[in-house]
Length: 152
Length: 152
DNA sequence: CACTATTTTTGACTTTAGCAAAGAAAATGT
DNA sequence: ACATTTTCTTTGCTAAAGTCAAAAATAGTG
Image (tube, rainbow over all chains, first blue to last red; front, side, top):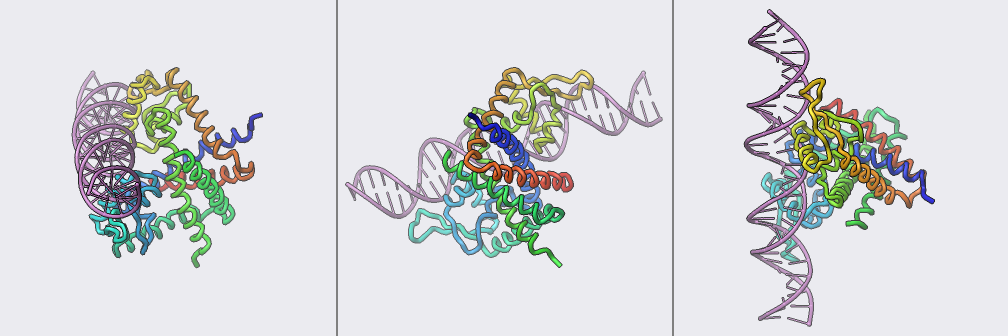
């Protein structure tokens, strides 16, 4: 006995997620461009927190990219003096990537403004609808994330 | 008086959407690769319906890409005999892109299997949670989509 | 110390994408 | 009727994004 309801819901969600993805990619591209960044740079900066330091691999994993790609993204950020790259003392194979002061300032601004952009989109709907969005995306994110871990 | 609640919700949604995006991109990439397609080709095929025909511009608009990019994606699909490309008779400036039989078969399989993949992810949660996902993503998709129209 | 494993980088390559100009056809003005 | 403008697609060129395999450097192990 196959679950017809599941099939319907899966189809609908597949479709919607697909469309959402295209829109959000366009949104990210616009935002990055407006701030003089390449999309990959914006995506990278957005996940590094001030004060913390990261290995290349950590960044690669959390961005779902290859380490070699990260090396190049970091090269770019380093050239713009947004991140520091030092060899770890405990294990000199590791790089320790962290934000410079300039980087921290920029990332602060970036996060602020990117959240504002979303605030702008969300401001005309009810608190309840915003919560529905949060819940829906939260659930979906969890599912896709664990699915990826299993199937990668 | 600024809306603190809005700001919080916007931040949370920003973060989640960002993560969801990365995961879904990885998911699309895996799926396309498993089916011997380039990601752009998969994305394109996914939006063309059997029996209908599309102009280059229509496809470009709905994929949020430039017409020239689409020309090349279609080149690839045409080379694999998945789509036909004929000059429109009413207005010979237009191309009419449509699925070949081979293309229809493939797209049918693709849609089926891509929905199945999502069914796999969704099968262990409740119908209500699936509906929450649907509602949340639907709302968000609407917001981002209209935002894009205004700000492009 | 030789060997293996890990982390990052480099080189070569593919894929994705856009812009500007060219080409081709239609619409429009005179 | 025909020169001009507009519209749609393609082409050439370039940049950005991304991967893989091999090299380089370090750490761990028998």
